[in-house]
Image 1: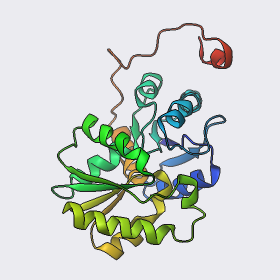
Image 2: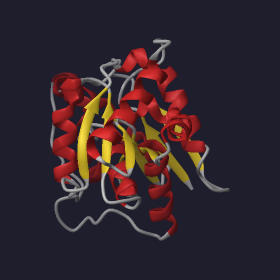
Image 3: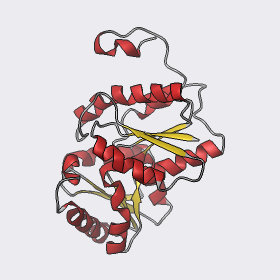
Length: 242
């Protein structure tokens, strides 16, 4: 089984961390390939960034289809381009926000999300509603660390841990969802520090994809998620046409 994990930003050091976290949870016989697109933003922290990340993401989905990928993980907490990716892909496509919220919903009555910048809170709220977790999601909190500084700020782990601790106290939640793929390797440390389950969407999404493929389940293609109609595109998107 081949699972392709796509970090929609172009920061390969973050992609390497994401790949390690995904590989750590899969079973024997499952291969994980993590990639960043050839085009797109260095980090995704706005609606603008999300929109511009989608062409590169879809290009990687198309490559995965040619290379025989069995399923895909979209490793950005905004879950950009999910519907379009499901139109292109034969196998299951799961976003890390979707997976993390599902996983956290199994662990108690409610969860809190701790993300990077305050400006991304609205997007996380929209996703919680879209996925049906508005009741279980008791709060969304920002640690105000930009995505790229997760790798360079020496205080990042301490600040994120304290934000998680405060979220549990403020919201009365039973679990924490980490709201950025760049936090994927922090779960165990934070859980040990604050004493509640901490969910990383990268690991959760990878295992959900593995499970669906093992069950022989794929995205339904009868209606909305059928392959897009062939047509021409112009300019920078010319190669996306058929």
